[in-house]
Length: 361
Image 1 (spheres, rainbow, N blue to C red):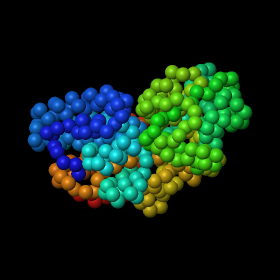
Image 2: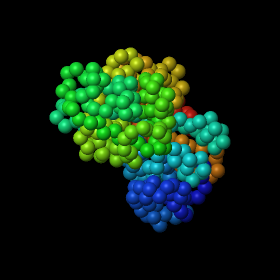
Image 3: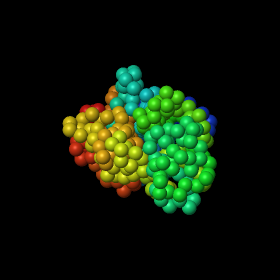
Image 4: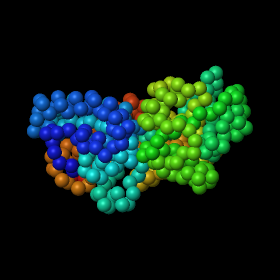
């Protein structure tokens, strides 16, 4: 694991290498952990290990809550997390700059081999289509094909026949659709574009699955919270965020047609159903894809959010601290995840994940 204890924060190395806009955003978001490092280092100096993670904003509220709770346990081990995007999180752990990364993109064979990285599922997430239609109180239904047509710019108005066909009982307004997307390097992009690629041949051919899709239309929103805020502020807007951002932001979000022909709304139950449909049986796949899973109750835009760690032991003290964090994350951390609106790992899968994590020592 990366060397150095409390003699210096990893904040500066993490910010180096980012574009100035990304670094500025990260600096604003890292004020409280930077203060934490100063306070911890001043009080405990050499014996304190401050673990630093970087990556996706999808689990940002969870990692912030985890830091609050975990950092109370033992002053000798502290944790902080910086939202930079999934791709940047993988780069930082691969370079040995951070102690762990986080995101929604499975590692490539090259990343596992060349950087000795391992990914472990942390919790389950559901990516939901959010929208802002004033005066529309009925739930809007979407299919993968419809969402693809919207994000390809082929369906441009909320009362388009393609939307009306799936929503015969909804009074749809004659209003332009304002598309909002995430910029490159985001795990949300990967999960959303994977689902669209599975359900729309046109989208698969023209855009495809990627954390950095080349969206043909729309306006970007840097973080998940920015996406939620922008859609909430603009009538006619559509976007996609993790379920808890929509629920806590009191945003309208629709049900989505699954692989068995049922319109399913994201919930803890429907997200776990998708995981069970793929992982059920041996519960040892740690499947890189849970989108468009079989099963009548499966929510189709489901994914793990992963934690990325190095399997190379460079510093026994930091390795021991990281293993302590993982042990806690798969115990008390799962209960906290549920409180924060995420879906905890199924009880059948959890022992397998714990065993994989323990093998890192």
